[in-house]
Length: 132
Image 1 (cartoon, rainbow, N blue to C red):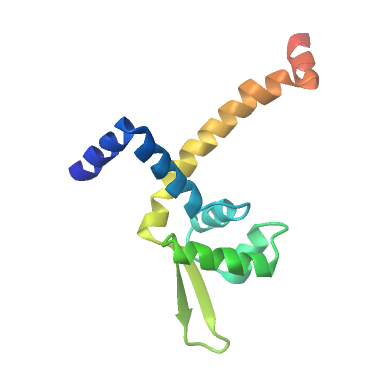
Image 2 (cartoon, rainbow, N blue to C red):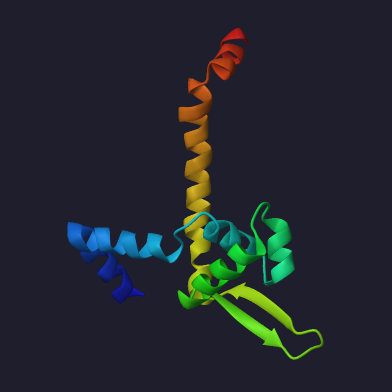
């Protein structure tokens, strides 16, 4: 852990390493559907259809492709059970579980950003606030 913190501090001192680390992070879950998939799996392991039901408008083909990409990047694991019909479950790996902190921070930022930069700048909301 201490070595990891030293490594992070060294990366923060070098703009090139910093950008590469950010780029590696974004590449791991780049795309429209990866974060929603990760978000559903933060609540525990799920089967394909469960994930599909929880993410509106994702097609089975796209879900299948994104699950393969996430598995290849070591963010999720796929477990196949020898049942009839075959049961497949997906869950976050240890590395994927670490994204919980990242997503929580993103949620906090998003809520604050919405409040201060979106809601305050929309005429309908600012009129209501000023009338009160």
